[in-house]
Amino acid sequence: MDSLTEPAAGVAGQLTIIATPIGNLDDLSLRAQRAISSAALILVEDRRHAQRLFQHLGVRPKTLALHEHNERALAPQIAQRIAAGEHIALLSDAGMPLISDPGFPLLALLRERQLPVTIIPGPNAALAALALSGLPSDRFSFEGFLPAKAGARRARLQALQREARSMIFYEAPHRIGETLADMAELWGPDRGAALCRELTKMYEECLRDSLGGLVALLQAHPDKVRGEMTLVVAGAPEQTQEVTDADQLLSPLLAELPLAQAVRIAANQSGMAHRFLYARALVLTSDQGPA
Ligand code: SAM
Image 1 (spheres, rainbow, N blue to C red):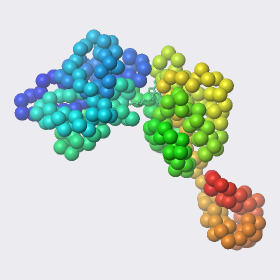
Image 2 (image 1 turned 135 degrees about the vertical axis):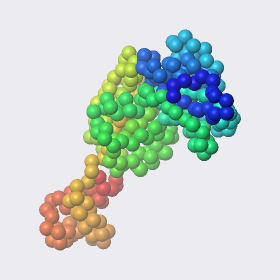
Image 3 (image 1 turned 45 degrees about the vertical axis):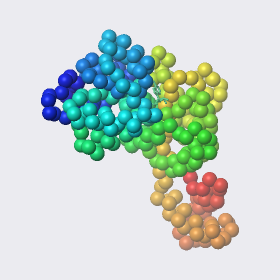
Image 4 (image 1 turned 180 degrees about the vertical axis):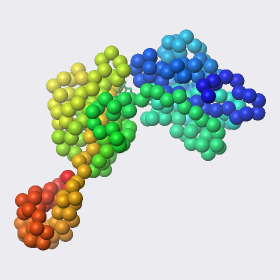
């Protein structure tokens, strides 16, 4: 249902989640335009920001600011209004509400109270960047923003070291250099990546390179460390069965014996090539563990 006009008496209203442009205002769908124009009340992340969109549409809807600092407190009264029959819309500053944006406490409450919710889907920076990246898009992991503090960020990256799916990160320009350098160090500089900037805007750009290549590129071109950016990184290469078998055989031997002796015993037991086992043993005994 598109219309957010007056509810019928005695019928519960509904929340409509509306995706809005991530840059180019022409990306606002016709359904979204109609819904915004007819809404009785619109929940917006930032009133001034939303005004730009409303001016573009030539509408002056009734708004209520819903942001990370008040969304828990406001959720019960919004749910009550919906239960009483009001049709309310939810927008964020850009893209899909709830995706690294406010809305979750409200949606959780509406779910608990079994109140109706619908959606007008549309732009989203994460999916736009993934599609543009040229990296595997069949399975992926959305990681949102990494922790701002270096220690917590590196711990999160270490936990993601073996993630085999493509990963999508939102990142701020002043942190992208450090983040890419940490990724290159912890995951290896050869992993494929794509840094997508200013999507749908005049200076849209998608830099497709390895992690190490992107570090060097941003150092050489500080002008590219600007604007809104989404980073997509290829997942860790899947381990072959041969690698898994070799690691399983070598690990207990390496715990007890010098490397050369462990490799010799493993080669005798398995018939696997000595050179291959030696290379795995080096990886297993390195600081970073198996790769
Ligand atoms: N809910 C939004 C969505 O659906 O994409 C994301 C909101 S999050 C607070 C904002 C982050 O999204 C930015 O810091 C940036 O990482 C990414 N982003 C938003 N617009 C973008 C654009 N035009 N190009 C690249 N990344 C963008």
